[in-house]
Amino acid sequence: MPFSDSYDRPIEYLRISVTDRCNLRCRYCMPEEGIPLIEHDTVLRYEEIVRIARVAVSMGLIHVRLTGGEPLVRRDIVELVKQLAALPGLEDLSMTTNGMLLEHYADPLAQAGLQRINLSLDTLRPERFHHITRLGNLEQVLRGREAALKAGLRPVKVNTVVVRGMNDDEIVDLARLTLLPDWHVRFIEVMPLGTGEHWSEDDVVTVAEVRARIEAELGSLNAVHGETGIGPARYYQLPGAIGTLGFISPVSEHFCYACNRLRLTADGKLLPCLMSNRFIDLRTPLRAGASDAELETIFQKAILAKPRGHHLAEHQLPEHLLPMSAVGG
Ligand code: SAM
Ligand code: SF4
Image 1: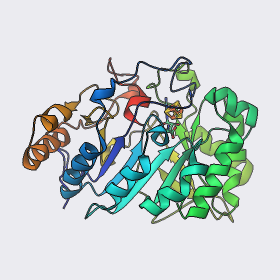
Image 2: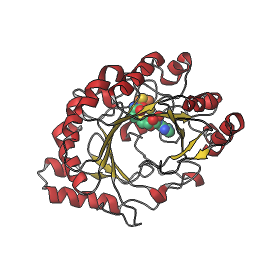
Image 3: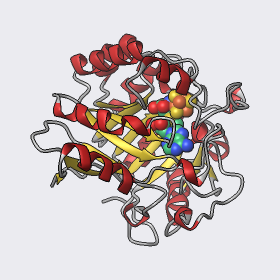
Image 4: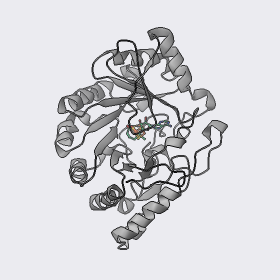
């Protein structure tokens, strides 16, 4: 049985950021020069991450996603996947990646026990992709996607952050991909968490607008029953489509009532909520020799510190939020 928070939400999902480093500089996430990096010796070692995950899984956090920064830039990431996949009770092990190194890693990751991938992809135009990510190569990412599918890392869900004037003219083209086999696309409202250049309310294309633009061109969407996933997306299909369309609306509509997650940063902070500046330090007690029972108590504290919800829709955002690349989205 998962441990529930103060609002009766069962907490069963842990997102682990394995590094704050990244090989891209997406404009809505990071400035061109990057962000000040976490000091090397405060980054959790693999045996520390595995120990924390073991405790988490024993408490019912049976879904684990690796993220970053870019998880594939951390050395020996396949070894971490292997050790996590071997944890008794872990039901689901996935990764969110920008895909730049996926062609090389897809097979070893699948063999190590990774189950599926979310791939961040905001455009289908090579030059625009390079512009948005500053360092990325679309062809390389698409080859990575193919490699992931071949390796059995399914489904590959594409995450598209929509920013007005950046890529909103491709909403329909991206949605149309789901008429093809193996394409699942989720549209995400841009959040004010980047340290990058995009954030004003005008930049946000609400999920309602994205949906209306798709339906105007491609027909009414049908809700997909039973495809709720473990996250906040709501899923639909175009008439005749094989793949699904997901909508994630952190800004315009609350989904906090269904929040089921905790986040662990690369330097061992447990975050009760993405939109809150509260965190609970797990690294210090861990390195001071805390027992599993003591670590469990810290997890419980983090779970009970989860707020009822955030107030983005009312344009309220706490100060000193950790950047997206440190928290992992
Ligand atoms: N580097 C990996 C990647 O890009 O997939 C994993 C980390 S990244 C921080 C995780 C997700 O957060 C990505 O899908 C990215 O598009 C999304 N993201 C980053 N900044 C965002 C923002 N300001 N608003 C909404 N989503 C954002
Ligand atoms: Fe890197 Fe992911 Fe942020 Fe892009 S969104 S800069 S790939 S961490």
